[in-house]
Image (cartoon, rainbow, N blue to C red; front, side):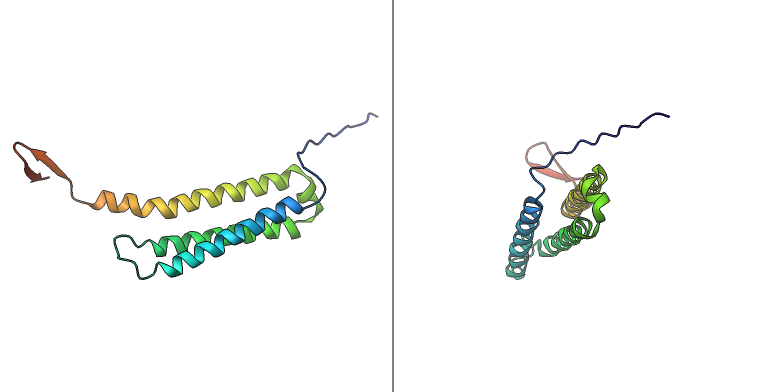
Amino acid sequence: GGSTVQISHSCASSDSPFWRIAAMVYLMVLLLTATVMATQSRNVEASFNETKYLAAMIYSHFLFMLLRFLVFFFGGEVIKNDSGGAGVMSLLLSLDAMICMGIYFYPKFRHARNQPTYSVSGRGTIDRS
């Protein structure tokens, strides 16, 4: 028969995992900084206090960073060298970003929706609708 030619394209700066490890170290520094900020802002006035949402985002980021770490180091040669590994990493990063935005914005939208609406009419009177 015939022969099959399989071509795989990927973008990499080198065979060294330096940049992936550097990115994970950078994320760890950011997570530790966010943890310190969440701890220091525990006693801030309630209207400015978003510590529980910040803590939830830190936990979310840590979970996804741990998943990326596990995929990178224990995923095997197929995931590391194949475009499937890039797809898995991309999926994990996308889910991390979407969940982070949900954790941050959902309580704000829920709070804004539950607030009573006011309309100004006439000469400075406020009618509660």
